[in-house]
Length: 360
Image 1: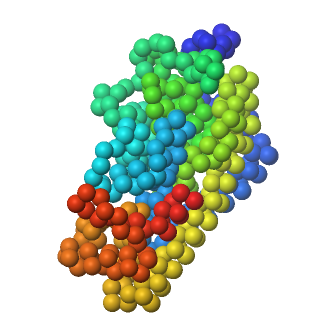
Image 2 (image 1 turned 90 degrees about the vertical axis):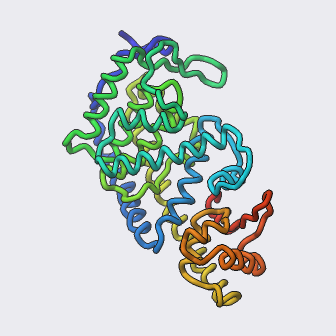
């Protein structure tokens, strides 16, 4: 049956694709992207406290990945919610935080089992959508539309068909073959999005699968490379190339796009880590000069674990009793390193350097 965008694509071909994908052009690009990933992998090891890096990158990825699906909130709302500052948060903010929860759920599950499975995909989507009984689509009628409400793609229908294609995707992910890992990631991403197994949350789940795949293949130790910013910057091209694979079998252009996404994102993340190291060093020196009595390496790291710091965060970090750490934060406010903000009965402290680093 020929492909028609308004008919369920139940004939979506199984993997692997029946075309040659390890062309000279693609392999050259993959070598370049893999080298940058290796550099990024080493950069993460240079930070004394990797939680500082993971917190900031995870927050921004949750926001950007959600924005691709038109779920928009402000950095301020997200930072407050992440820090559990009292307030009433809208549904968009809550959904962004659930994406972050799904990311960490997937990372820990995959590290334990070394598997990317349909059950894990369901768990990721269920966490994002906060639906305990979520499963693959069973009802017909799902269609992908553009901004003009025109149908551009109709994914496969029928639970048995969808599960069959997901089982094939699992087999492809874990197959003991010689296919280049980054090329394979690009294929996996297309296939998951084409199967579109859930009623909602497919794009975000697929982007989490990307980072989990890189960790699974030992290209990264930690989830620090996120493609959402690159996709936002090239959104039209991203969706056009996805459709071109479906409509024309144009795999080469799609794989090249994803390889460039990995390489460019690795480059920008390497620079982000260098900037973070500089911020930590600058803050350390500033406290040593302006408030030497309260300085400690652990205090500096604690200030960068959340963009908005609360007294109890420093308590939990073992830096002292409540009154002691409260005095630390007041002193840091006085010397301009933190900025105190009153919220109800509590004061929280903004680390503006970290805020700028996250959103920059």
